[in-house]
Image 1 (cartoon, rainbow over the protein chains, first blue to last red):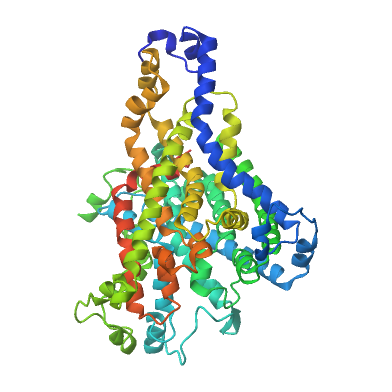
Image 2 (cartoon, chains in turn purple, blue; image 1 turned 90 degrees about the horizontal axis):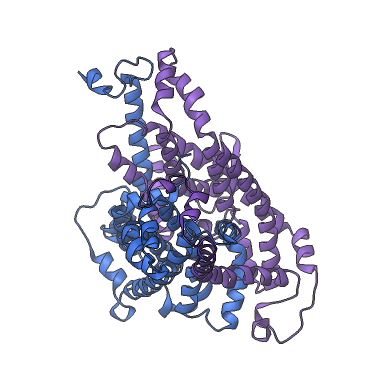
Length: 326
Length: 294
């Protein structure tokens, strides 16, 4: 600190140390807005304006062919898009698929991340390298990852089917990416959906692993040692010391992954294009827009999606407030 | 012997010392995890260097010789009997570099204000930016598509650039703010005392010490733009000359392209990102997980 003892306390004391407090505050105001205005401009132009428009589109009858005339004709308001969505099998089916997909992915990637973080908690030779290698699926471009998975699962030349037929006694190749449901020991299993869930877990678990590792590193070693001195065994240390410390960040990860997976388009579309009952909401929005050329309907689907997400986001904000306080 | 080496950090604490069983358990978990994470990638690499006919005949086989012709076929222009991935890579590179420059310029300023300057309305603007970071992007795809096609930009790389800047600004702001918050404040205070202007302060004092954070953010932004698929599909699917690398690979998958060529292309576009990411891994990770330690 250059200004000596007057500046020991942050905040108010620091401001008082500046010679002309009013001017300094004004200057901070001016430079603050100056610096933040480009960011706000970007946000306003490409987030807030589109958001207003999507609401307008959702409540009006507008198709792709109407684009050249936008802004020249008055908007005709209607609730039809929402009525049609609520009445359509496609919408409710997609919603259920999406909830299932996002829920399984969230739980799965948290579980995998947790196992990895706990397994790599203590130092061992090569830990840094292992950590780095575990991040590869997260870094991989999604198109490259999907191409590899599609090849591996291909019924003709894919490694999974070849292995299954050579060593597991499969009679016919399995169309992993197109089969809606198959009986495994008498239980119906949604094959294609589970494959896309596995793919998403594969890609996103490294992020959960990173966050959990960061949290684990800040658990003070003394607590654990004290517990050990009191005779706690490894399982008890895990159950009563580590897991409670991880609870908050785990909840956040669960919620964030659910929110992100809820809007997934790339992963599912690249693997299945919606085949095998994997039509998630984002693919539904894309279909309404591109295939059906119906902007109004696509906007309505999107709005309904974001309504659900807003509830979850509110949960996230509440949770992170609580985490901040504790 | 092994027992002695196992627990130098925990010494006498019987309860938490790694036992032989727990170390064996860890070895199994690590082996399975590596197989699970890297297995598919290794499989992709192996297939990309095998001749196509061999792959279809013997899916489980290993490469007998190194056949790199798939890489050349993928990259060459259509006129030379290739699949034009070279051009797609250039398109991607242009858009990604443009995105990095614009996004970082905007975010350095915004993030510095968010981290350091006490201006009125700071809480509100910070709140808006966080909300945008978490806002469902897919919902805005529809109006963005409509606006940009009204402006005649949906069939250009410029349109894509605009969308990518918009998509990366919130996350870049968030990361860079974390980096700025972690910097020592005293140097800046001294500079302000000495009558440094805002511009001088940023260029001469803040940026030199914030460079690792800026580079890490830039790499992360580059990765997002380089890997992006959805908007490229939405905007450019009809314009083969403008395809980005991810769109090109995905689209070629629908044609009769040998799978070895597709995989070679996938590996080729992956290698640069993976290398760059690992060079800056430490910084990127710390920028992403900041706040999780509490």
